[in-house]
Image (cartoon, rainbow, N blue to C red; front, side, top):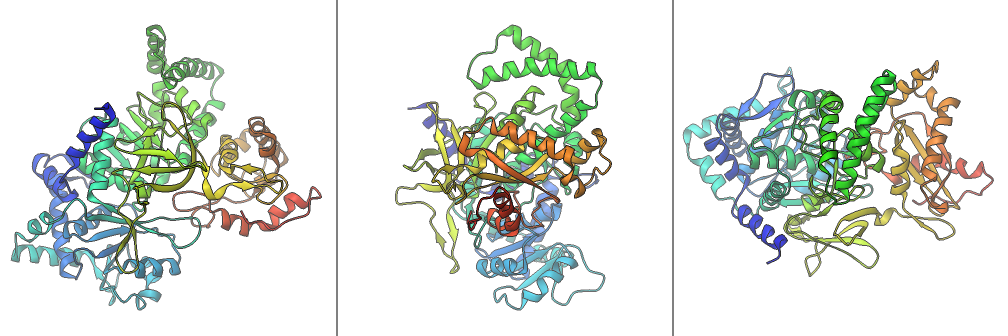
Length: 620
């Protein structure tokens, strides 16, 4: 049997018959006193035994207020311990929790609540309740609203979480075996969560993931990447994001690890320094900001320090390139790398909290290769992965012992990947979700008759099976001359410059490509001060001629690596940042291209009319 098939069979056997409640029971039994969950900066660590006891209590309370097996519970809450607890409490009932983003509009909240037919809605506190109040009467399936933070005056239309605990405690005293009976009836094929894809247009789709999906992913990752047992991790992304939901909940339970919740993403580096995790998943913007921060620090360092880091980085990068090409690193070079790491690079890694890193991962969007190489020169080999909510996260991945820079790796254990005639990536295997939730409560399959999921991403496969993502199928630019262009490639090159936080390439039905550019709101002011610019803050900085000249240099550098039809002919720097709250980005920090094009239509037109080109409707 092929070694890959043997490994897939081993993973399937390990994952068979397991459920999340069964793993939590194991942890509370075998690892009872090990730490499970901590909030950064607080003395609130729960052991596995304590965590499960709280879950049992809340599970009984949720049953008392009407949550039933097979029904849905929506959660709109920040990253905090109660989020983990109520989620797992619902799972132990056989109910299906679904975390939704707090940036949703009222209409979107109504849609998700009605589409899921949620019986229970768990909210952080009074502010969230005020947002929901106008639509509660329009939710016929909703039985109860639960508030984690209690208001000063009791709310007639909500029950405090403390009351749910009290009800659960009383129910447990009345029937001590009810909790055990309930979770033991749950099967691997049942849903463990419902995640709504944020999408860039249209209504979101509710992705149904099973216990087997998430546990198989944990087993597969364990087989592919070796990290210490019970390793500490940092959770900072929203639990509506498949990466955090998998890593922060399911993988942590599988490995009986210790999760430290970082409620404020601006404190992430501090959290990493405090925890020193062996693995960490960062969306590209996190890695870009880390790289930019180190570059800014080195720019102000003494010449001797810069020279030492440059020399250490050069030797480390030399070994990295050999490993990326699948070639051995000579002993002499390996010794020089270890010396560079010990004397120069480890202190830099420690400032980022990455000194113990075994597997630093990146995904959810492309990351510039220049950023990967810069971090690799610091001894931090960021490994790209690729997948969707529909593939339970990682469908392909690079591993520490087998990776290819610029690719998203090879298929995960048991997964198959192939390309359609038009380059669209198709996947098949045990990580593909159960399907999309229908309004009638059924589940619509996402695969074709042969089990293949059409991902909507476009890519290439090399002879060694490494996948490279080139674009989204529906986001290709087709210029007025008929040239097909990948905007992601252009945007990736532009964002490689530390000053550029976001960029969107424009050109659909246009004669050439232009770009809207947003400055990095942390790096740009620091850079401006080093240049002696009197007004180092946005929005004034966006029109500063010195800064515009630097951005032009970044555009020129990107153009030098692009074919002539792909090159950016003109650009505008916008005066304010893009965020999920402002609407230009999804909660997972992907570009909402249609919204951007609509919102900045006049600016886009000016990029063409200024050059004497007649404006055409922008439909990108």
